[in-house]
Length: 217
Image (tube, rainbow, N blue to C red; front, top):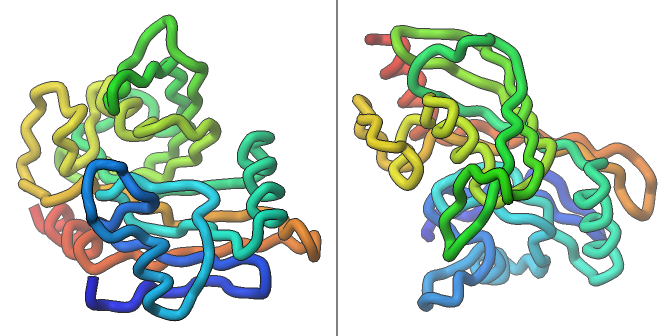
């Protein structure tokens, strides 16, 4: 990782950064790959992520600089008081332009599947625009299950562009190198000041280029 990670918000207790795709949020336990914490430390920033994004997903991550702040923010996650909004591009056109996906999810050995025995999961989405065979979406992640957005849309028959793990045999005509998913906004109540912190993460260059490719078809 050569480029510095962009800081979106910073004060004495909290750091919100724009994680690039390809970087682990936390150690995987399977190797010596760099993580967000290590890269931030090299930039002179000490903080621990309060949540995570998949390796191939870019966007805003909230980090805490002390244990009390981290605990308070984790409580907001559990109570669903923290708002996370994503941008995505999915293959096909969804039957409803705005709607909810409620498939229960069960995690097994690093894989997630839809199962009646799984945990309740809720993803809300809005279609921003439709091109030939592609939908641009804004997604509110209500529950935060592992790989939730990716599994929900793949199960609905509309895998995200670049999806390989859950694509269910659907071919990606764009041959995109990672999943087209970006955490573009987080909003939460600051545990100490009680002010609302609302932060947006700029779209990375690869997703901007993908948008141009899709529009030019």
